[in-house]
Image (tube, rainbow, N blue to C red; front, side, top):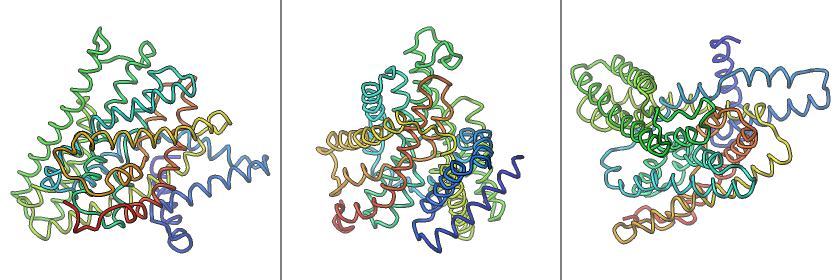
Length: 421
């Protein structure tokens, strides 16, 4: 199938499955689309088991495997999704919560990676560095899924900012940590070049600094230049187009410069959404830019969750892998608790935290498409099928089970908005 045919099919199915969910399941939009896609995929697999001569499953599986989910997300959709999410987070709010956001997106990702890696290595016998790579790819939370479900929970502003800020930044940090660990774990396989350094650890640190700091600087520079141009223009259609160019072009430039494209997208989005909206746009332009990016967010989110549902055809569900996936769910939850609780305890003498911060942020740390994409992009090895299956099981559990219950958890254990400090 051509790219246009695949795109057309995804949009048609996203609309059709969205309508089915709206009329019958009545789940939150993206989760409902994922559930319908999973049901349809499992139905095809079941029918093919009953009527093996039909070869329907084999045909669909071949198309799914031929479609590069990893590149589609990491080189295209992720930049737009992160840019759209960052547009709606105010820098002033983020500045007030920068300590917990910074610690959870850095120390939290490191702790989560270590807990999952050490635990998975011990449980499965997987080499530690490869298990740590799995820990890195499963640690980032999905900002779109998190913000989508928590909108229903009426959380205090400070807690909402912590969750939004952390989920936006830990995607970029987790991706950089993943790149570093892949370079160390698969050295000698063509995937282990850590920028030519003879010392692997030194090279890994250099890669992390280049990716993370370089991505942030590039995002701020491009966002500032775009803001200066928008100040000279009062044409909402053109300004919407300029923001789209920033998200697309900036992401591809970051990839070409070997700096973190996700961090670039977040920093550029934060600057345009706050400084750019205040000083570079008219009221009419702000409304159109906001509406445009909300629509992009919803459409891409629907398509992303649809693709996650169909990726079941790319996963090998043997007994060992399924057991590994179930153990990985428990490990991922323990790791998430560690990643939230330790930064909170470290900051408690200096900051006030709302009631229920730890359980809400633990259960609300939903995993998403980036984890599946990173698992698919791993170099081939004897451990890749297990990692891919475990990742898929964790992501589906996270989105469906945690996603459908996190609002209720937040309402049950969280504070009333007026009690937040």
